[in-house]
Image (cartoon, rainbow, N blue to C red; front, side):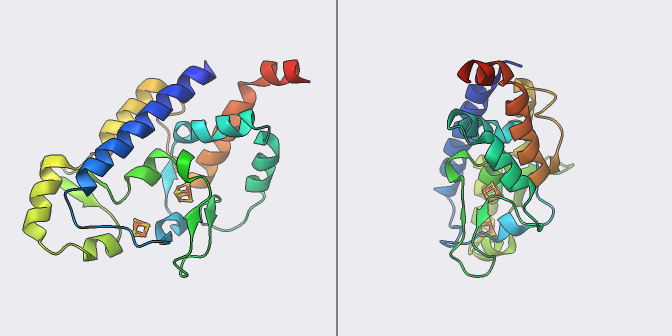
Length: 192
Ligand code: SF4
Ligand code: SF4
């Protein structure tokens, strides 16, 4: 695996997601309340190792990769290992916001497509409860909401192995750190 090449490709994809999500959000009334991080405490959040590759590579570049791996591995509980703050205080945040993954960027800003080809809004009850004009929201959703599967397809095209398998998010994050560790052995040896 050419690690730098994959990192750059995932970074480009994350940027594309941000642009597409902003375009959709600018047309609708839903907004995450400041400090809300309830979804980061969800028990069933799934992700691929590849979407956290830029984060893991950043840790390698800053020399924190191994220490962070053991710190995260030893964390207990079902919340994402990278969330700060509790679920109820509205003072929470993602500790790696700039490097957060595909799922973190899309949930609440995107749609899945049902069997009839209709987009279904993918969001929590907080965001769904903010929709005032349901008809207008539906029209905007169908016309401009980003669709999950498009980005996961692009992720797979970067690396079919690590971009296709979904794991519970904490496992995906650890696998991403392992991936960078295993693909930077030679560089680490040179640095010693
Ligand atoms: S998606 Fe929902 S749960 Fe997650 S931060 Fe936004 S409002 Fe909170
Ligand atoms: S990586 Fe950050 S945004 Fe994503 S689930 Fe974890 S804490 Fe939340």
